[in-house]
Image (cartoon, rainbow over all chains, first blue to last red; front, side, top):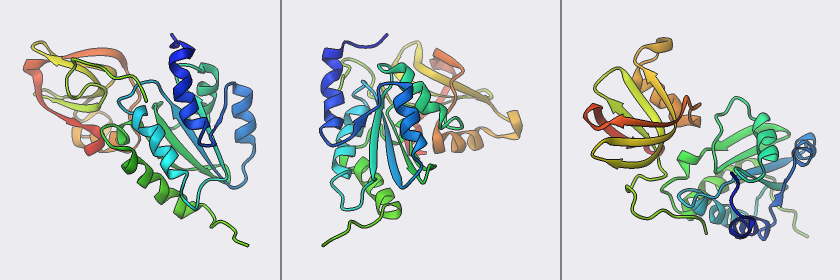
Length: 144
Length: 90
């Protein structure tokens, strides 16, 4: 059963305020996945503080990196069930995990950070993993 | 911010590998530990040799991407437990 939106809203806001777009429906997810160009990060958000409490600030920190994905989106496991199920259908070979973070390049899944690689770590450690992926796959920002 | 859980085992919320004195090894999210054993959520179990894989082969594979759960909840009796470790540290 989903948690109260009152409880969950700050957890949504923690990502959206960093520029991560929420996908609330299966159609939103399909539209996101249909665009296979460039780099994209999909964060599977979650209520439990044991891991998600570190995943969200880790994502926020990582997105301050010079190289970052062209698109960053999130679905909320346990809350937006339809959107989460559809997102997982695009990663059907990977066991469901929340929170988790998937990274796509030209529509191909090139990196996945499952929950058990987030648990017990701090936000900086999570961000460090993500920044390594960003630096490997994302183009350098264009400077004037 | 997130929800946190007071009064639980220090492994609460952590995905763990529970090895037993038998052929089974369990991977699941620890809820708590007490005199009865270890309570797990979203649990997979592997029997040594199934699919041609040893317990350790299975654990190494699980450490890469996770496991497909076979049980929503499960208690591993304390007298069967040989070791418990974090999957993220494998």
